[in-house]
Image (tube, rainbow, N blue to C red; front, side, top):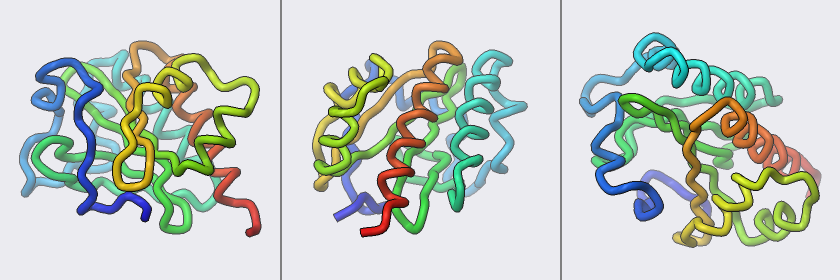
Length: 163
């Protein structure tokens, strides 16, 4: 029920032509995990670094650079215990992210206090596909990267609870 590489990923919340501007286009050439730090423009690299380091600092989180088809292409995928936490999308001149929420996770997060407005907007705008809500957000500034880390941290806490 959780997203996998065969799940159809919704692509309708971004500006027209957005996915044509991914930073790494060649499906046969996997970028190194730290490549965006030198390949992105300086401010975008800062945002990528802040989001990446914030998520990687969470206990037991794994990072994989994976090719997810012709639209998303190469993404930085974060998981804990095989459960998806989120994805970073390095683009030619910017960075964005996607996080996925089950209905139960969404109920918990939307009821929590202190959720940044940008995260709330991403949740409200995210389409539900394959049993999860796909929430996309751009990183126009460092605060957006911090908001992404915050929602991933909260999801990490939810997933870390004993059942």
